Structure formats: structure tokens, C-alpha cells
Amino acid sequence: MKFNKKYTDYWQKTVLNSIDGTKIPGPNEAEIYLKQMKIKVDDKILDLGCSYGRFLENLKQKTSQVYGVDPDPFAVSKAKKKNYIEVIQGTAESTTFPDGFFNKIFAWLVFDVVNLEQTLVEMHRIMKLDGLLLFTGKNNNYFEDDILGFTAEKNAYLKNFPNHFTDVSLLINKCNIFGFAVQNIYIFPQRGDFGVNKHIEINRELDLPNRFYEFLIILSKIDSQSYSTNLSIGENLTSKFSHTAKTFAKKSNYLQVHNLFEDLGIT
Image 1: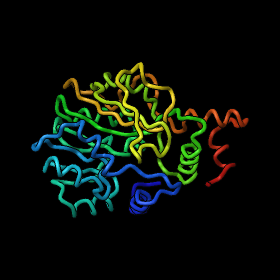
Image 2: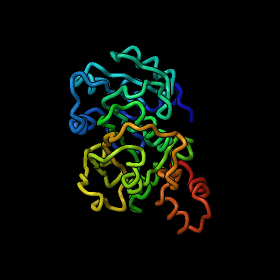
Image 3: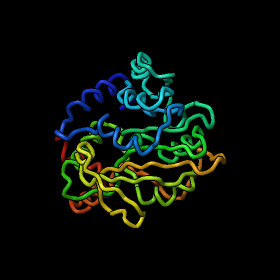
């Protein structure tokens, strides 16, 4: 699946009426967590993966300095018709904005489809010292009885939709290597919980449970040194398939997850 008009049209319809009946978290839910970013009226904020401008009104209520970036030229053309300061075509891994440009970065339902390591390096580059980055994603180990979560993972793979699963514990442990510190952590146990704001706030790393479906993290930039996009921590922060799907495949005597998904088919 490429980021193009087809994908943007699909996404715009899905956020209004998801296939499995769960509510996709949107502007109302975002408002709850944006309060944690303490956005000032003169802050420059980046709407990363802005698409057609779904969250612009949330951000404009807090600052007039809202910029957007998206890889899909069709989405960019739609967003440019709205009241952003500027919208450019680019990726999370390479935005082309100047160094230290933003006070805040907002990335809602974006980090599932990016190279996480390269994106963290780029976010650090374009952010001011003490700036904040809010992003969401899927955990690589969700509950085995989360049938909606498993089905969503399977269907996304079979439809060739981009979908990454994050080792959240490793991310929290290693974020300092990318020049960040954790400010806030929220987790959503099952698929669908995020859309109804059924969350658990994590106050200490030790309190992070092993299994949950989605997460929202706010990081702060803690240094001004430069980092290479080739930065490696020796471990993978993300994986193509979740640990849960790998467990299902093993229990069902499949050597590879994709074989299990292909045999089950789209449901």
C-alpha cells in the first residue's frame, strides 16, 4: 500500500466507520492528551502525518503556528486548503524542516507506519531543546483473547497496509539514546479501548504491563547534540508481526506468521 489518494480516501472513510465496529480515536480523544503538552500561543507545532487536516482545529485552538507534513501529495493538496502556516510533502524520517524549528510535534496514529529509529532521530533534529513529542502506536504483545486486535493485524497484512508493532518497554529504556526522556505514558489494554479513552496511566517504567494493545507516549528533548539516521541500538524497536501473532502461529504449527494469515484469509 502506497501513501496516495487511494490510501487517504480509505483512511478518511475508516475513521468515520471502522470495519470491525471499534471507534477510531479522533479529535475528542486527542484533546484529552494535548493538554499534557502545555502548548503556548506562540509555539510552533508540527502535525506529523497530517493527512487531510483532521486535527488542525484541535491544534489551532492552542496556537496559530501549525505546520503539516504528509507523504501523500493528494492529502497535502487537501491540507493546503486549510489554515496551516505551511504543509509540505515529506516523510516522518525526512521532513526537510530546519534544525530546532518546532516546540511541539503531534503524531497521531502515525508511528505504526514509520521507521521508528530514523523518525526519532529526525524528530530530535527538528525540535527545540525541551520540546515535546506526542505519538501513538501498537504494542508488540497484546492479549491472546483480543480477537479484534488479532483480526486487525491479519487483515492489515493481507491488504498490504503498513503496520508496525513496537516493543514499548525497549523504547522506554532506550529513548535516551535518541536524546529523549519520557514525560507521560498511557496504555490501552484492548483494541477499541483507545477510541473510548479507556486508558491506564503509567507512572513508573516498572509499572508497565507486558501485554496491552495501544499506547500514547510523550517524550521531551533533553539534549542538543546531533544524531545519525544510521543510529542503531543493537535491537529492533519494531517488528512487522506482533509477538502475539507469532505465538498463535507457533501454537498452530506454522513456521511463519504470514502462512497462518494467508490460510485464515481476510475476515
